[in-house]
Length: 112
Length: 117
Image 1 (cartoon, each protein chain N blue to C red):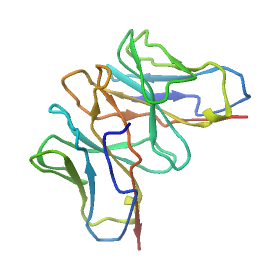
Image 2 (image 1 turned 90 degrees about the horizontal axis):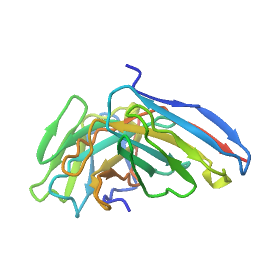
Image 3 (image 1 turned 135 degrees about the vertical axis):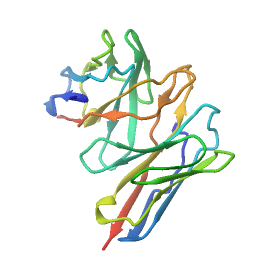
């Protein structure tokens, strides 16, 4: 089972900031939190990864509170091209090895 | 660099046929995995490998076999295709995912679209 919970869908408008929150109550001490973006008919693409506090790159910011039980992906000033499915991942060590389980993701629709 | 290469991109099988989806990466990644994605759904982990000679099951391993004889290649074998295996299959690799460190960044191939009639 996926270790993360996200909203199924979100709507936004061009130019707005979008915040997608992911819950991961059972995150392990050594786990990083990683977000991916997927367009139709393509494989997911890495967006951002963090361990704690705040991480920012050229496309997004990731906010992680001190307890690390959730994280928020922030997309500044979205455009139509940001319409995609966004996945939040943490590791899953059931069985001894680390494996990455995708949840259902959040389907973001950006409107004109 | 080619990255992660999957072949074939499209395949149609009849029920009961077997086939192998190929996956190769040229990034010297230890970790490789196979996911399937049904229409409108998220990705489900089939099998994964943390290095040559080491494989393990994911969420939905039934009906699939894998092996990892080299670092570069991670083929996925369908033993006896069923219509329920109609899906898009993605191979992904990462530099290092082991017991104590999660780099998390997976590099995906373009996918292989399989239809089983």
